[in-house]
Amino acid sequence: MKINRFFALIAIALLVVGAMGAISLKVFAQTGNPQAAQVQDIEDPASGPDIDNVEEQVGEQVEDGQPDAAEAPGAEEAGPDEKMPSYTGSIAVDQASTEGMTEADESAALQGKATISAADAEAAALAANPGTIVVKTELDNENGALVYSVELSNGVDVKVDAGIGSILFTDSDADGEQ
Image (cartoon, helix red, strand yellow):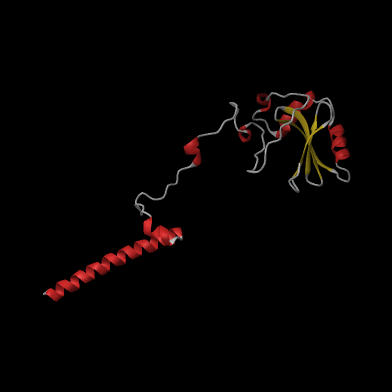
C-alpha cells in the first residue's frame, strides 16, 4: 500500500508540474519573454483581451467648436497624413447654401458669384504649370471660399480664386508635394 500511495503522490506531483509548465509555455508563446513566463499573471480566458475602442475612451475630438473637416458638407476626405488646406478666397460662400447639392447643381448655383471666367482660371493654372493641359474645371465651394478647381494633365489640382484669379492652393496627387 505504501508503494501505491508513493506512486500516486508522484503522479499527482508530475501532473501539477506539467500543468505549470504548460501555463509557462502559453505565457512564453504570448510574450516571447522567458522571464515574463515566470512572473506574469495569467488572465482569465473568459474575460478575453481588452478591445476598447479609442473613440469610446476619449470621445469625438472637436476643435474650437467646429465639426471635423471630413464631416463638413462638400469636404473631401483627408487621409491620415493629409491636412485639409486652409486658404481664404476673395468671395466667401455660405456652406449651408450649397449643402446637399450635386456638384453640377452647386456649380450652376455659384456661377453668378464668380467674377472671372473658367477660361481665366484655366489660363492662371496653365501659366503656373507650363507644359500641361486642362483635364477638367469646376466651380466649387471649398472651405467657404469660391474657387475654380482646375485639374491638369500631370495630376495637379489647382485652386484658383474665382474673384481675382490668383492661385490659392496647388495639390499634387502624383508625388504628394503641395
